[in-house]
Image 1 (spheres, rainbow, N blue to C red):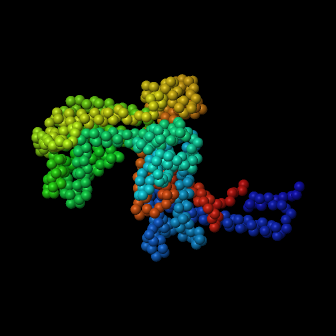
Image 2 (image 1 turned 45 degrees about the horizontal axis):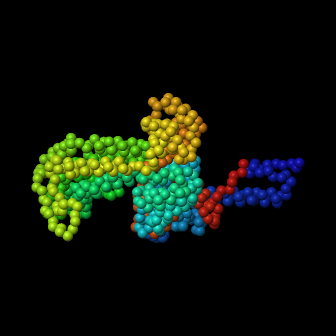
Image 3 (image 1 turned 90 degrees about the horizontal axis):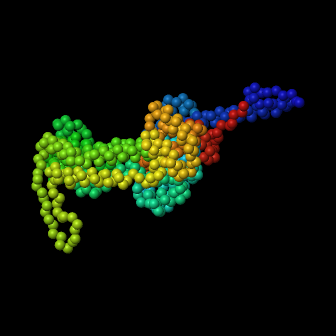
Length: 618
């Protein structure tokens, strides 16, 4: 064979017999290739700064562009100002002079870099979902200016046992019917390549278009995903319980209307607010602000009641010092014994549900534990239904009234109205002024308590008794834990072939570990080996994947409100969704590799200059 020798610099074999022109041409090509590689590395190093600034602004939810980005502008916008700031301290940016046609600082380049960063985040989320092979969806919609935005979130369990909720983006839709919403969800799942995986559950709010059992979204979605259980958001259910209670009891409705009027009176007038602060300092009751009520976040009701109770002496004196008729009316209503009684009563009742409100906001909440806590709240409220508890609340009310020098009155105003041409079911006229302990107990305390218990009893269900029992059999604190018959119903619903031998071995294995583990489904799932307990591991994974609330969607709407402000209302749908992903999924954004973002950026469209390094030769 012909004798060969090797070029040490390129590790490439060169034939020994070559003309001088051939060798010169080879080394010329090598020098051009090395120069080109050096240029590409310089462009990529430059793009790393742009990618880092894009990630920072996206994470913080800050606007990119300014009103005037010209060379004479004193404020070129957040993106350009960050680049200018970096250039002052970064020697590379000081020495690097990009071509005028490839600065990558234009608005279109912003969008492409944002899209590339968002695609990297979504690709990592999708890869995790595909590894787990099952997921659950949480969907909600909200009005954004003159459009409707649909938020899609997914819940899945990593092999290590970590429960994760991830945001996949916003979708804009025009119609509000169940078919359009279902098609939008299916398009998003198809777009991300997870439509063929097992969707174990779906969680929405209680609107009829979403929860309809015949032609609602949940029914239409189950036509293509028959195993997907429908879960009415438990946090929304708890809100509905308190909403229904206040609407059904007239005294409670009037009470919360009074709290809203007090908040509006002091928040809309700077003079009134300053007077309240002055009396707070004089009486040394603290400077706690009044809390606005909300129909969708009933956890704020207990905060409003606590704020009124803390500021009660200052509120009464402030209203008394203002001569406006509205202030006198508010003072008159606030100084009634019935109002003070309901302040004390609702503080006691809402404090019982406050812990459940906070628990339902957690990402790792599981269905069994949520039902257990709901049952505990229900049992606690049942124990309150006694004359002793009513007497205790009335005594606290009397003590508070004595301190505030509020005197009760037994006067009943019951002026009758003549309604000869109408048939009425209830007495007409002004309701009596309640001041007696027995009247307050019978007309306010017991009716409110009964209504709350009734609503707690009939809500928080919907998955079916047998399947719910199967989910409970996965919880180590349940009396049905690892019950074979209970687990069979859950396994059959998801086409899992359960093996009785696995259950027997798992019982023996977990009995030895009971003292070392916290009784949660997540801890048991982490202990079970996939090869040793394949079917049991899958059943526990299903139980952990089923969502309890759709609070993640609500949080995404909070991000939407920060991103799509009136100063940024011309933002396109794709840019809005990509920025929302970067802002919401900050944990994933922190792990993003800039080199991967640049590779995606380079492949979005043909570039004038190459941004991709040639494959290395070994």
